[in-house]
Image 1 (cartoon, helix red, strand yellow):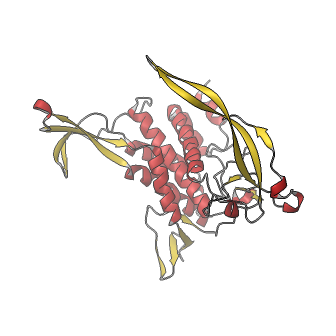
Image 2 (cartoon, rainbow, N blue to C red):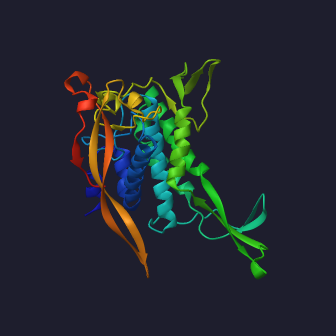
Image 3 (cartoon, rainbow, N blue to C red):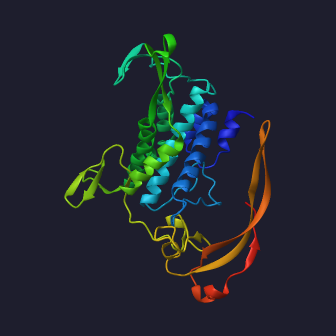
Length: 337
């Protein structure tokens, strides 16, 4: 099937994005994979929160749910999606799966770090190309308009790209007689995407609420000490976050009804917080797990399937009066994990 047909049938793309898709059909595979990677990492980072980055099944956009409210959570979605695209494209370059890029061509000759001089060698991940293509493709949607929300999205897209570049590590191999490290050959490598996700989560925790400057050309962070400019690595937002207790499509909230919670925890995963004061039901669940695992020579591990009873707490819906008391709601059901 021609690239034009494929690109025209990817939902949610703008004209500029469709053009890039037709010109670089091989890169589009990495773009889609990276966007999905971003959503999965988002769900991992927020799996114990009221808002768990759930993506609506009715949303067919390549970047998952595009939240309308300019909250901290929407800001994180844009940042982690942008980072996922950069990471996926950069990794594909180094693996030789793209026609227009390979290893970073700028990493040649000699350089130095705190351990002394080294020679560039191996295959440095080409994060320059990954960031450049991600900026052209992901930012194309926001550059059509010049409103405040577009500026917010562009800032968070950039924060995501910078997070990937920040987590490049210098890896080296020693050469010399009897293992002496008289000569080092080094290259720059991507870190695991989970490291990028954890870093962006810390940026989310310190996200800055912003407003547009008087000229309408940029964003200004509002702080207790007045106003100041944002940095390029900041995650920014306009609107206060909702409580995510009930379903609200505009806010990107699916609610917390039927979510599992921990009745002993005082954190965001605790039943008091997760269930928004509505209470919870306790179910006894039969689950299958691996047990009695033994190593057999050579070389595999064989396990039995064991059944265990586990108490699972789930949040009640918005109408707690319709639910039975907790003490009378224990029942058994079978699940497999």
